[in-house]
Image (tube, rainbow, N blue to C red; front, side, top):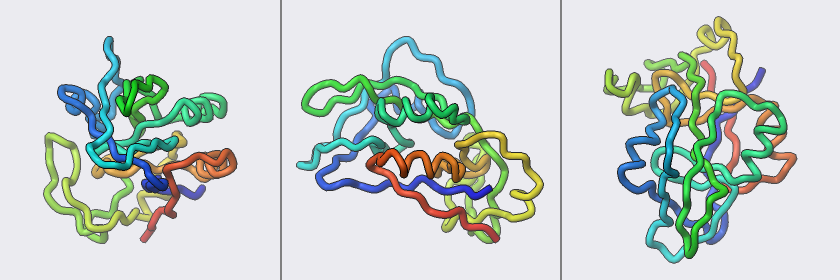
Length: 184
């Protein structure tokens, strides 16, 4: 099975977004756990002239998925992600976006080849990685059961199976591109 990293792709005129306090700590992406909230998190477009919105909104601590993306995931039984509803403010309020909370994590990083630095016990992983390199032996030894996941020792990137990549490309979603997993 081939896996791909989801990479941000800014569309023409697309803005960037910031999660408002205290939600920035609630939506921590490095904790592999389900999140249950009584109130939707608040996300604001950053103060730039660009205010456009794509299917994947970029925020400092992860990604927000449009209703279109959520429907694609649900309709295709894509696993490894929980969608946490948020409220986006961008010249009006949008309630159809959700934070992509990755709940599946696998130990695949080759820390030496990746030049990983500063392991944090609080985060459960490295705080700096020069280039994400996957350890072939670790990949071969694991039974990856989820369509979407992050690396257990470096949770910055979201990875998806080839099946997810093909589905998202076929449906023409915006705001994202795919990069092949680098394996050594």
